[in-house]
Image 1 (cartoon, rainbow, N blue to C red):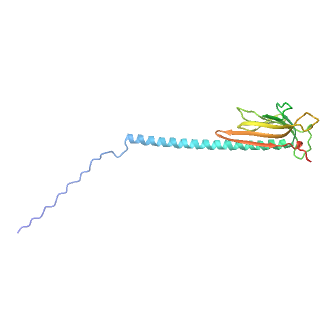
Image 2 (image 1 turned 120 degrees about the horizontal axis):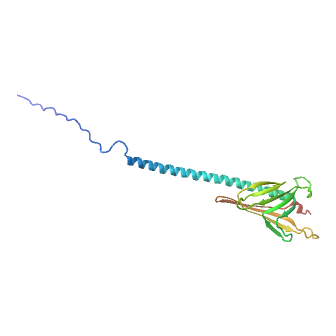
Image 3 (image 1 turned 90 degrees about the vertical axis):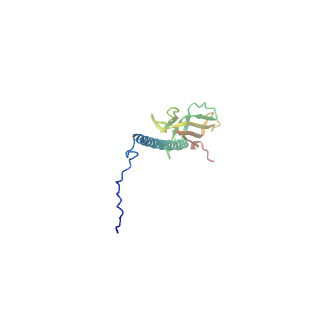
Length: 200
């Protein structure tokens, strides 16, 4: 009795499937990637530039407003010690005066007032386009504050001596506005000269 054994199957070699696309990036894909990267870099650069400009404007505004505050305090402190005021353009008859330039004769703290020998100074606002608050002393001009877009002195004048028609300044008010970019701050203050105060 003969037995038949199945013949072993002949394994065919596997054929690799043809690739439907190349492994490397196509030129179109590379160009799209470069375009997206360029747009991202432009957006990041614009954001950085905007942030840097905002920081610079804030720093300029802080410095300008701080200089204006120091100038305001100095003017009012000097006005309290001043004995003689000469408002520019005052007609010697009005009860109030408003202007942007004022001469003051003052004495040092603790010193005895002597208008004949005490120093005099002039505060003046230059206006546009420089917008500077300036201080004149002994022939030298000093820049006190910049970016001052509006400034005014307001003086209340009163006839202290009934026997004299000469009026004296009894209250000085300073009003200034500092503007940098879209930011602005308004500073005001007033002072009463001690020379006009009557103690009873």
